[in-house]
Every structure is written in structure tokens, then in C-alpha cells.
Image (cartoon, rainbow, N blue to C red):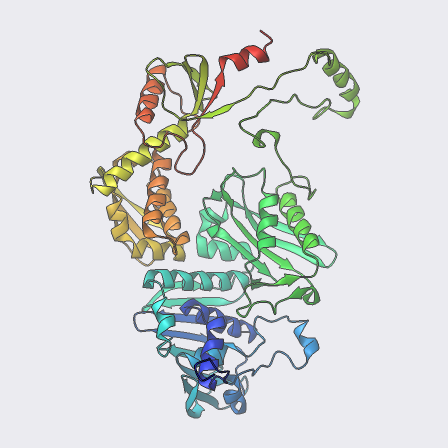
Length: 584
């Protein structure tokens, strides 16, 4: 029996550190919890100061403050002013309520809390390190609360070991600050990083105004307002216009009763609403806030309050779809739309327009009769015209026969017709060429006679600033020019004449949205962005010689099957299929 593990009670210190792990996953968790406390305290000004080099986080607000006699209760486990009975748990209208954040943070750091309650003449300060109170004393009567966190995870080396790079952790922190600023537009936010004031957001009257402050005027001009109500449920916010979309979900912000959440149901409903509005594989831009009765939202599901449980999820999902569709003037029907052309690209059949669709009511009967007269007799079945996926390696006998819609190029090869997407062909060729040159440090570069200045929002500024060397390895020359501006002096030669500003921001977005992936894969994504921007576009007119040259380059590619994003490059129609379709 002595060799078997025995049951024992954990020490209070170890129990606190384990509990802290549920709430404080990384430095950004500290910022989130303390900013939410400041918002609950009705603050109109919140200042966030972070220095990861010095392992120091400071959050200051001008909210209600903590009474002098309650300062020690604030850092005690389960100390809260938000709930008093079990019933209160099922009607939570605040950001925090468990009384876990401050003691959890204090158990894995040195925490100094200073506060003065509104109207009191003296404040109070407490210092806690590793869960042990070191000092309690009077403090100046400055209304509000200031929390200073130092040496985070000093006593939990395993947690510190799994922290990411400073750039990655700062990216998460910036995201948390931006989330909070979007959740509370009426609050003034100041953000200081390593002694530099990188964000000053005055109070905003609307969410659109706050988005304009954070992301810029051009960004905000590409959004439409969502404003939908269904009895006791409201769906409001902003959605990107159909042409304004992203490669990842980095620009999707969801809130329920102003609480930032990550919710699969909300995300799924948003994708449903945008189903036929954005290209497949692209992600819509959306800032969505749901206002629901607190009784139907359970916020007690996740220790860090990142997830919620809804009493009637299908009703909420339908409201989201209706709200977004209404914003774009689309049908408010919540039923999913499945375009016929997307169902099976290898078994495709063009269907005629149903009788009367889009025709004035008074003319529908005549139109339907004309349709009946045109349609082949039912006794003669119409065969399906089948497309077959194919690689892009054409034989020397292939002949370029033309271009369709200035988008697709066609070749006759033996007994089949090969149809290629000109953009995906060129994108695959450029991607492989750039990747080989990157691996040999020989990407062709082009200096700019007139340097270009690019301005970025806080998240992308972080990525640009911390990855200047990465940009250099990709053929760029960037240098800082102020807090959020950068100068582009050199670009990859394939991008000459393109929109350098937007491409630089696209690469910054890629670096920011893939922070936790293998960096080699992230670099491949960046190179695919460059290739996509440099490639021939739909709408570019090509001659027969240009089509042949493009096909020859693709024939030597290692993977002439799809573009770097996974879209197919080529389809074929066998000659026999065409003959069968036309009853020959």
C-alpha cells in the first residue's frame, strides 16, 4: 500500500496557482480581466500600460473605486460585489462576478492595488505577492483604481515556459484592448507599450465612429450598419460590404450584451448570412453585438467567461441571419441558400431559369407558356454535361483556342477541352517561383523611386514593427516612421505597379492571424499572398501567345493541381461528353 498514490489535500498556495491557470492563461488574460473590472466600475477613462520586457502591466481607471475597508476583500478568493445569492448567478449583467480575477493574478505575480472610492478623502493600497499579503496602507485620494502587476508567472515556471514570443504575446494584448474599446465605445482608452503611447481613443458616440478611430476611415467606409430587433432580442453592429472580406476570421468581433465572446453558433450563423455574399473560402468582416435578456444567457460556462450558453440558440441564430441579410437589403429569410453551381463542380449541369422568375406578375403566365414551348419534349432526356478535374500539365499538342469572360482560358488537347482559371494558373506559377527564390535568398527586388508610406491599425502596426526582418527576407524594405506609419522603400519585383500599401497590410494580417502556427507555414502563407496579388486577374485580356506561355510555365510546376489556397486550376470536358450533350 505504501507504494500506491495516496489522497491528500492540496496546499492553499498550490490550489490558488491551479485556479489561476484557468483564468490567467497569458499576459493578455490579465489585461482582459482588469479592463473588464474597470468597465464594471463605470469608468469613463481606462489606461493600459504594458512592458513585456520589464514584465510589467498597469491598468488605471477613474471608476467608482473600492472602499478603504474592503481593499483586502478585493484580493481574497470569492470576494465579489456582483452577486449575493444563487439567483443572481442566473441574471448576470456585468463582465465579472466570481471574485476570481484579482486573487488569481496575485497568486502568480506581485500585485499592487491602489483605489479610492468616489467621494472618500483617503484611498487605500495593498501589495500581494504569490498570494501572500505584504503591505496594506493609506494611499492618495485619487478617484478610481490602479492595478500594477509585476513578475507574472514568477512562481510558475512551467506556465512561463509555454509563453510565446514577445511579439505574439503583445499581439494578444493589443487584441484584448481593441476588443474592450469596441465593446465600450463611450469610454476613453489610452494604450501605452514600452513607454510609447500607441493608442488614444476619445469617447465615440457610435460603434462605427470607434471602428473609424481604430481601423481608419477607409476601413469604416466599407461597412454597413446592422440594426435588427425581434421582440426582446436585438442584433446590431457593422458588416463588411460584399467586396470587403478577409482570408481569415481576424476581423470578426462578437459580443453578447457587450461581453466579448467566442461562440461557434454565432460564427456559424454569420457564415450562413454571408453564404452568397462573399467568395467561398473568404471570411466576412463583422462587428456583431447581440442584446439578449440576461436570464437567457448563461455566462457561467467558462472560467475566463469567453464562452456562453444560450437558452434558445436556434432563435438567436435566425435573428443573426435576418439582421445581416436585412442590412444588405437581402431577403430576411433565415433558410440557408445553396447555389446549384457550387454543389458538385465535377457533376455540373446548367439549369434553365425557372418560369416567371424576375418577371412582373401580370406577364408570368405568358412567360411560363413560352418557356413550355421552348423546352425540349419530356420524352427526350437532357444528358448532364460533366466536368472532370484535371492537373495543369498540357502536352505539346495542346492548342490555345481562346478566353472566356476574360477569366478562363481554353485549350484543345487531343480528345478533350481543357478549361483553366487564368488567375489560379499564374498564382501557382508565381508561388512556386517565389518560394524557390526565398529558400535560396534570391528574391528579385525593386527599389521605389518615390517611397510609399503605409498607415496601420494597432494590431497590424505590431506585426509590421516586429517583423521588419521577415519582410526583408520576402523582398521588402520597411522602416518605422512614427507610431503607426511605415515607409516602403523596396518591394519584390513581381509586385511592381501593384498596391504596395494593401499588400503590406495583407502580409501583416497573415502574420497576426497565424501566430501559433509553425513559422515556416506562416511564411508560405505570406508568399502565397504576394503571388495572389501579383498574378493575372479575372478581367485581364490575354492573347493566344500569352495563354500558351502561361500553360508552358504551369507544366513545369511541381503541383499543377490547385492554387496555393486550394482552389482547382483546371477542368476538362471530354469530346464524347460534348457529343452526347448535343445528341450527336
